[in-house]
Length: 143
Image 1 (cartoon, helix red, strand yellow):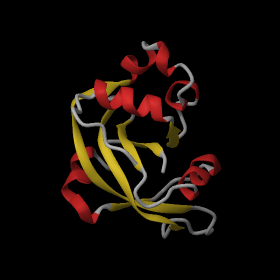
Image 2 (image 1 turned 135 degrees about the vertical axis):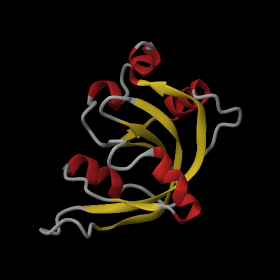
Image 3 (image 1 turned 180 degrees about the vertical axis):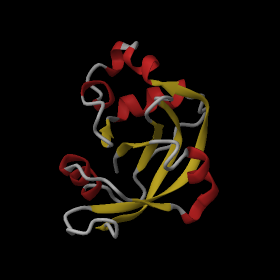
């Protein structure tokens, strides 16, 4: 199992939108970057991820899980890209900002720091644990 980070513009699809879907989840469509798409191809049911508000907020809001593996994205007219479905797991009691991440040397190699434009990115296990703790989770979810 693996850990991921999903970036979304809150005015397009917000953490509150994701939470409202609950266990039913929602498809993560609209990705048009090959590296991000390949990351989604590697995902397995049960993998966990951070839900990140991009643009002005730039902060991790909480945890989601993959509930459906990679399949064709219905919004891609050329049929090159796919999507996964994700569902709400838990809120962070304290959202973790990009400034918090960049200010902590433990995350120097995290794609959020080194390749911040990538919309779907891997998170290593140690960073996962540390970021969950920074977000106020008393019990760290495990994939």
